[in-house]
Structure formats: structure tokens, C-alpha cells
Length: 108
Image (cartoon, rainbow, N blue to C red; front, side, top):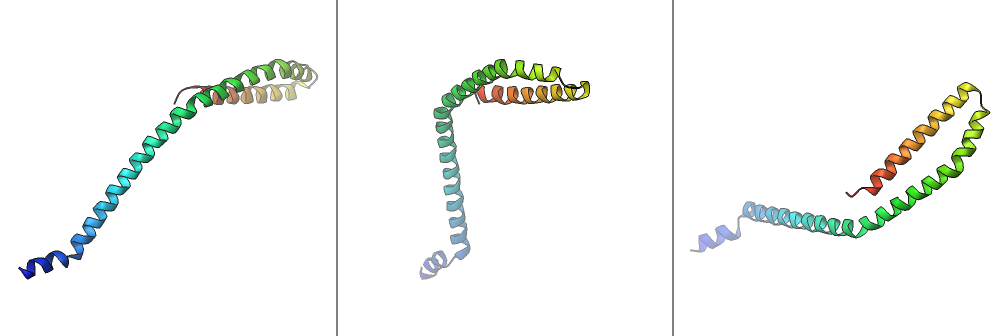
């Protein structure tokens, strides 16, 4: 009977396996808790992000109304090649801005 007790006490491989299983189990539980917390935070923050995106869209629209007429007049004074380059740059910037604002305003 003493040999059985010694076998259970002196089995370092089993002890290491048990410790590894416990560590993996704790890791899985930790990851699950983080995922739940991430979802909770996302639910809390999402309305604020949408509102901020809506405000940014309104600001962009106001900026377009104010700045575009000035840029249009400026472009009219530029040489053709430069005017085309400036128009292309404006289009790229506007498209990029609109894409970012669109993505920010959609639910995730």
C-alpha cells in the first residue's frame, strides 16, 4: 500500500500535466471573460461613436459648403495641368473622408 501512495506523490509527469491543464483552463476562462467585457464595452461605446461620426459628417458637409467655393475660385485661376492635379487631389481626399465617416457611422 505504501508503494501506491509513493507512486501518486512521486509522479512529476502527471503533476506537470495537471498543472498544464489547469493553466490552459484558466487561460480559456480569462479569454472568455475578456471577450464578454469587450462586447459590453462595445455596446456602451457604440452609440457615442455613432454620434461622433454623425457630428463629423455634419462638420464635413459644412466645411464643404464653406471651403469648396473658395477652392473652386482658386482652381479657376490655375493653369490647366495644375487645376487637374488639384481637382484629383480634392476628389481623393473627399472620397477617403467619406469612406472613413461611413465606416464609423455603421454598427459593428
